[in-house]
Length: 131
Figure (cartoon, rainbow, N blue to C red):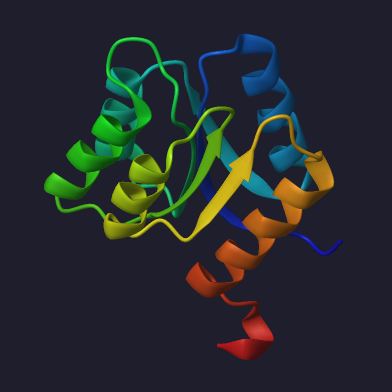
């Protein structure tokens, strides 16, 4: 797979998965930040303005959808890929209304997530020959 370039925020409360994703995306050429909670994610979004967020729906405290709502209320519009083990149709509809186009069910194949992120990043930051 080609390199993915851009700023990526991984929001996942499971430490091992968060670290695995951070390593995988770093190896693909992304500048990766991580957050274990919605509150931490909001602070990072304000400070770092990521191009893309990989966001778990099931976060302790402020859930993934509330985190996404607050990001959008703050005027930020990074692309978002949702990770979920138990997403409901209502959650999917709400996330889509908030601009989410991609949902990845847990458990997932890492290669699939890498492809989805690469495709999303190409739309945010096209390769130099396409600019």
